Amino acid sequence: MLSQETVIKTHNLTKTFGDFIAVNAITFEVKAGEIFGFLGANGAGKTTAMRILCGLLSPTSGEASVAGYDVYKENESIKKHIGYMSQKFSLFENLTVKENIEFFGGIYGLSRKEIKEKGNDLIHRLGMEKEAEKLVGSLPLGWKQKISFSTAILHQPKIVFLDEPTGGVDPITRRQFWDMIYEATDSGITVFVTTHYMDEAEYCNRVSIMVDGTISALDTPNNLKHQFETDSMEGVFLKLARQAKRGE
Amino acid sequence: MKLFFAFIRKEFWHVLRDTRSLIILLGLPVMMMLLFGFALSNEVKNSNIGILDLSHDESTIQLANRFDQSRYFSVIKKLTRESEIGEAFRKNELRMVAIFPPNFQDNLSHNKQTQIRFIGDATDPNTSNIMINYASAIIRDYQNEILGEQKLLYRIELESSMLYNPKLSSAFNFVPGVMTLILMLLGAMMTSVSIVKEKEKGTMEILLVSPMRPIMVVITKAIPYLLLCFVDVLLILLLAYTVLDMPMRGNIALLLAESILFIFTTLSLGLLISNLVNTQQVAMFISLVGLLMPALIFSGFMFPLENMPLPMQIISNLIPTKWFYSIVSTIMVKGLGIEYIWKQTLILVGMTIFYLTIALKKFKIRLE
Image (cartoon, rainbow over all chains, first blue to last red; front, side, top):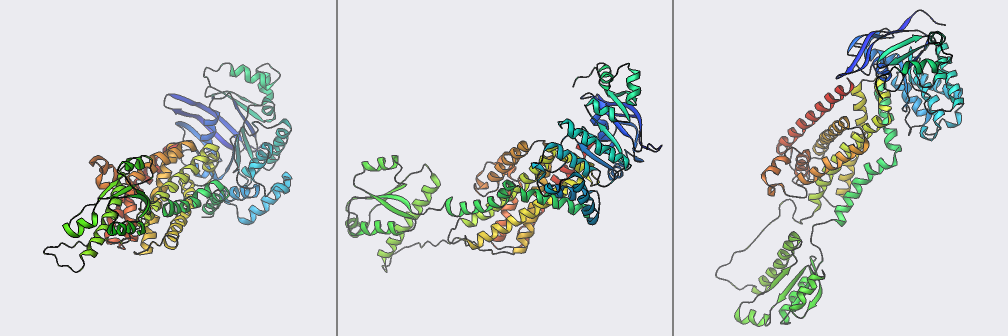
């Protein structure tokens, strides 16, 4: 499943806000088709790093490319090849499920026909035929998150960025959500995900843990557990996070 | 281009589905027009007055009737003693009292001279002034009638004409005013609130990671409001013409073009606000207090600018409503063309460019 193609590549990527170093010289690579877990305590710099990779922020120094495009110069091109879903809500509450799909399909340049086909397919797969005409605001959170993820990958992006996609969602829905993530990787999409749930970290192919703006550890979950001599990702995380000097 | 329309369509869905903003957008102009047209008027109509008639002869009865019949006054109280006047004013029963002294007709026909005294309640000085003017006019008419054909040695005839608005209809003043205020309020407030709402809910981030250019994201958000504000202009003009009998003397195409320009001004102000604040409440607060208040005070619609102290007159030049108000009343009421308003137009163009430049610049900085 994993190819050798690198879709995200950073070298000493740094972002400062005034005196504050939010992201401090991080270097890593993500391979195509991988599920890459991006962990860290609140305030560790995850969101800032993710925003740089999505083309929302310009880095202060260092290098980074996403889907082969440079984050400094080609951020508009990056945007065409990624999908994005955030913990804060990613759908419009006063549009119906269908209208949301049409809108996101539209802004990612799908044709009317594609939107219709893919939209129907998506609604069918989620089993939401009855809810298609309902306003998103009236649906339960778990459903919203599933629709949100589905619209984020509707245009078959190379990479999808998920910023705590399962925050506040029940365990069953979370499990189903991860099934959807696996399906997405099967179709060749690379997944870059941040989470606070350590069981979800176990589902990732590789995990990086950020502490105070730097990447303190990066490996497969099994190797990390071995390296830190503990039997769970939670153990690994706690050992690293305790070193943090920065507050929230 | 397809992108562009996807955005605009989405924004329309937002507006049309949100009953609250729809009511504000379409209900507010109608409500304000009707309120100003029928309820809030500074015209004097059927004001309650009292008459203290101490002679009670033919002339004074005639005069009292004339007061009662005029559309400005209605005589609701006949007083009998001077001491009752104070009481009537204190109870707020009367706005004005006319006093005819004893032997009114005798003095008039034999001594060729008599007096009438008006007492007005000047708690509201303007109204009281207007009432006394109307009352004096009634007396003057009466006097001219009894003078009849008699030749006087010297006589100055007074003839005044009220240009552009001979009936002194207040619609001529408030229609341009309401239009200015509505556009200012809706253009700036609705746009800024709708953009800030996306920031607040986090959906702005989603729009910004999309392939749409950030500036286009903002522009597409403003376009539906441009259209809706334009609908409001049409609505106000229609109401003015049909319900309030306000004539449209100038070129309607010119007026509509100027309106679009002013909508651009207010939309760019809205964009500017949305870049400075992060919550809907603050955006609304700034639009209401920071924009509507000065717009109201400095438009010249309610308070004459010439009477303001110099510093305030200078400030008034910075407020876009002043210029638009002047444009609308010049076109609608005076029926003049672009040669009389090119200066105001240029100022509005300049202001729009200025606001838009800062707004877009700020927007970029925020993204960096």
